[in-house]
Image: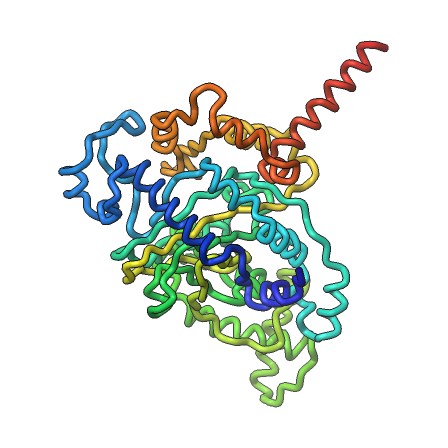
Length: 427
């Protein structure tokens, strides 16, 4: 597979789209995803409209116990459409898809190389050095989102990784790639009305500059941008574009030594340059030309995946179509030295072994990312009893798949450590 096209798009725009499943395969996955969501959250009722109709749920569904409380809530919001289901074999098969893994493993090499697009020669020379990186699901498997007709824009949720502290996202910090594989989306209507992903392209190219610009700005109580801004972030875009345009002129007028004829502008550039250099030690890189940042809705067909740099803001859109929009998150992370046998790795391995996700709190805030309802459903169909279908499935995975799920490396390391202990005892 030629990764040059995807690497160029990822470096320049912050995302890339590629084919993964055939249309027939995508339809099979979509039908299965809808059926499973209905089984877990609607007690087998196939009327998907119940997800958005609390009154009808009261009439048709029996109260069930969840987190110590009896409820008939679907644990589903019309802005996100999240379905907390993780451990079905067809879901895990998507996580080990070779095309996705191959593309993402090469994209992880691009971080820190944004400048290679300045000339064709730089980019071609860089392509010769690209190497795939070792990956794993260090936060566990990903859920999927099911946006049916009536679901709304998810404007309040922007990626938490943006300008967040390292420990509130992943061990890799801001340098992270997220992937959504679409099994269902209406391609016959206006893209923004189909429930698909919307991103702010090229934001990652100004990541360090924007972080510097927002330093000390009191835009929110926590002073973290744009994690806690929600819809207010859109109001800041005009201001942000003006500042980035100014900074581009500053960078071009100094580092690239471009001619600035206006004396007042040149003097102002010199002043700002001296201030920034004194504060940060150097001027931070930015592209030669500034193109205003604007939201862009990604065009995807069923069976295609989109992988993006999580330094760019992202959110999902409303769905006005009768066709559900179904996107499967595949959160592949780069696995670095020291991860295996760490406490975090043990937690993830245990989650896969027990088919359990129960992240009750996130940064001190109650989070509904769990699969308690999924476990109840799996028990009712006998999957979690004894040597279950799930156990058999996990045991049948090839070495490559087990490495993605952080299982085999753990076993290998444990065996190696046991062998060393045995050898030492023998001595």
